[in-house]
Length: 100
Image 1 (spheres, one colour):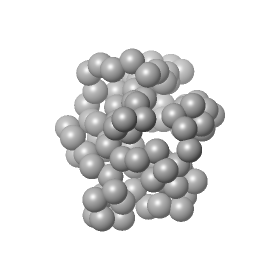
Image 2 (cartoon, helix red, strand yellow):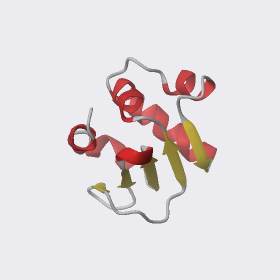
Image 3 (cartoon, helix red, strand yellow):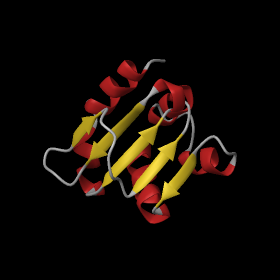
């Protein structure tokens, strides 16, 4: 799985993130990052770093599994496959949208 592939999957689902109404950063370590800005309509996705209410850290492969519904975000967090920095409430709201 590459960052380009993850970005393409996320772009296909931007409309569902509008309800998030915040900015989140997805940090994939050495593989890069994506920043979701759902404060605007339509929501936007970029590779630019910047302020965010929460940062989700995980591997590209695990994030892909989460997008595909194979990996539950709560289970990923509990097992250390997903780490959150910043607002836990915002991260939970985002996780619920990722599961849809």
